[in-house]
Image (cartoon, rainbow, N blue to C red; front, side, top):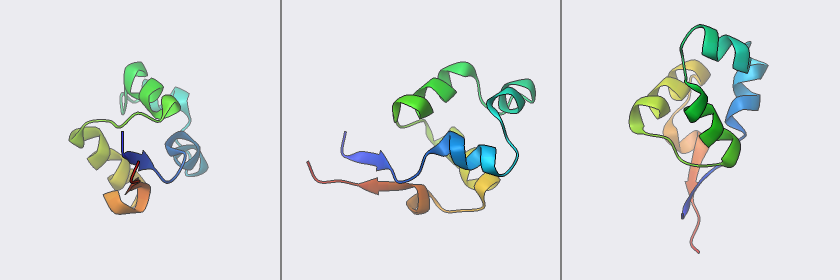
Length: 68
């Protein structure tokens, strides 16, 4: 897929205090979504909005188009 993450989503969330345990416990993301982050797969718009809110960024700050 030509859309890729510029950053490691889970590492960035962990840096601001959101471990995978906390993300699951507080029901921010489910295990399936976190697996998608680990594999570099793109998530849906709702999850993308949550990431942007938590990291205080725009979608373009975390994703990019890469011509294949």
